[in-house]
Image (cartoon, rainbow, N blue to C red; front, top):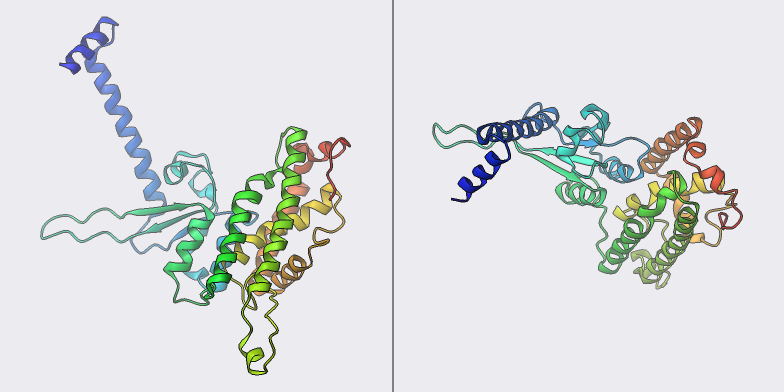
Length: 323
């Protein structure tokens, strides 16, 4: 009865119910076709490798790439620029990640076998956006490959989670103040102050991790109660927290002195400074460092800090830009 009343209403408005039904059917077919193209474009076969959609300059993507480098998983993954799907805002990409952001991991699953004469199901594509979600998937899916990268000590693991949380919740959302625009000058200055504050918070977590670290086995044998002093977040070996933090600190170390006049981003942050240099010396860290710096240099050559209004904003002496 409701459908009949709706049809009558549409007819009274001069809209043919049959034509309306055809339009709805067309839209449904079109939406299905878009979804199908997106799935096909990332799954040429059931044996395809997981695909990470990312670009070298992305600090969030670098977090995942660093885990792959450390675990020796690079050959088991494909790394593609989102442009192969038409870009972040293309229909194909948005079908996989409605947020239109990167990184994005697409994991193909083999088709399930049907019963008897029943056809096999089409391959299912598991799309995982968000760098921390992807990082945790890699850590647990491939726990038996390469280093674990998860602290065994519960206190250290809690502090690793904390420093990752500080990065994800308080630094990453405002880091764009260093290179995006247009942006109100007041907002840019406020976000930059937040970055400075959170860098101090990170330094404090480094100190807490060092204080709560258990004595090394050799120190115990010698009767020496000297605690392991890093240089990584949770001791002598890197973990997932180092991967989360380091790529963003490459941004900070490169951008803040060059465009905002900071003399030393590690001033009064000695533990962070020691950690950063250790990460730069690490084989995987050095690789990520080169990838991101090259991308930032490309941005510089393209005039990004002029076109986004950063250089003009820092001329406004009503606000603090140098810390």
